[in-house]
Image (cartoon, rainbow, N blue to C red):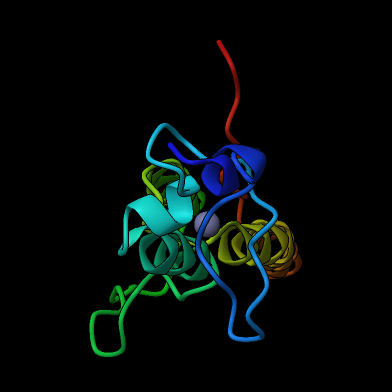
Length: 132
Ligand SMILES: [Zn+2]
């Protein structure tokens, strides 16, 4: 190494568009990791951008049959948990499903109560689930 290179060894030897040196710490070859590996910056940018993308590409959305029972809701939530952990579903969608689950189960419960009251009013003996 000559005297000039030794004096700037604490900085990357790549030159900016302005003609100044980059301030990044160099590796053994005198360049910072970004300039040593030409595709590294693009790859890191791509990985960062991938975090903001939608999980399902357009046209690959999951088809969901409307849940009719609490068991259906349970199954959908279990699949959603699996998809979130497997990074196939965004956590925001999972949160939305959680809110919808609460409203749907409450509606199912009310519907069941309405049916039982209707049966009582018509003089039928309502079906009551009892633990034995
Ligand atoms: Zn550099």
